[in-house]
Amino acid sequence: MRLNRDDETNAEADARRGGGLTTGEVARRLGVAPTTVRSWDRRYGLGPAAHTGGRHRRWTADDLARLERMCALTATGLPPAEAARLALGGAAPDPPSRATPPVPPAPPERSHAGTGMRLGDVRQECKGIARAALRLDAAALDKLLEDAIEEHGLVPAWTEVIMPTLQAVGRKWETAGERYVEVEHFLSWHVSGALRRHAPPVVADRPGATTVLACVPAENHTLPLEVLAAALAERGLPVRMFGGALPVESLVAAVRRTGPAAVGLWAQSRTTASRPLAQHVSAIEWGVRGARRKPVVLTLGPGWAGRTSPGLPHPPGLSEAVAAFESVVHR
Image (cartoon, rainbow, N blue to C red):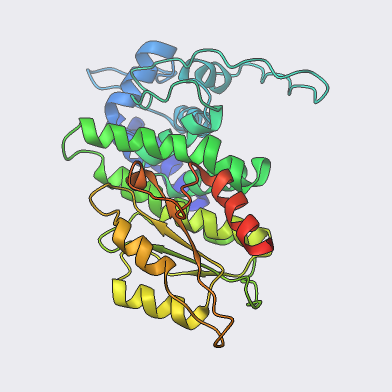
């Protein structure tokens, strides 16, 4: 997280006035919990450089700048111990040579001051994104998502960075009762914004090449369709995206009006996946008499597992879905 210039000026003024800032004031400025600040002090020696009288510790402008660097480093996914070493003035590690084979990642460090989420063996960026989401740090989160997409490309960034982080946040929410719902919504919103910013311009319709994407009725998980729409647009395919919970009548009307080569129906849950609906859409005809066509319906998402039938392809992942749509359009 980065304080803006006005915040930095105010922080310095407050730190000078009255002998420094309290731990609570520092935590509010950084967007972290006071227990995190105390933990960084106790575990990594990031406490106030000068000691004052009384029971309460006071933080100067230099102390605040050091903690701000700690926040920025952990937001990139660095383990807290390594981030603390650099924040205290340690030398930054040399960047790896492109000619050097990548070293397998070490087991992720579990810190009481970290995310508390079991991310497993994932890319380093996942940890930084998760920490920024838990802090509700919008600027850091947008920067990390942008960097991941630009470095890896849209499909790999989704598959290897964004989706594992979303799944970890979802597990955190499921095991913590009603807590962390705001984190899941916050992360989803920023992921959606990043996908839209990186999506290519809308491709003009071409006869027989249009694809229609929609969630089935009662299904509102749109992020997987958003990244699929962007990936298809990258490959020059015309896409018509209808988003969440499209009513049956509206879905049928959209298919008849656009005459798509393929229709993707997303269902996150088995309770929303409807085989009769998919079969009905696949039977819709359009075109001139004697040369009528029907769409290929692709059932997308985990809700369709075990509920598909012949003629309704079910690609298991994003890369497979992109390949399936390309195959239908170009055949």
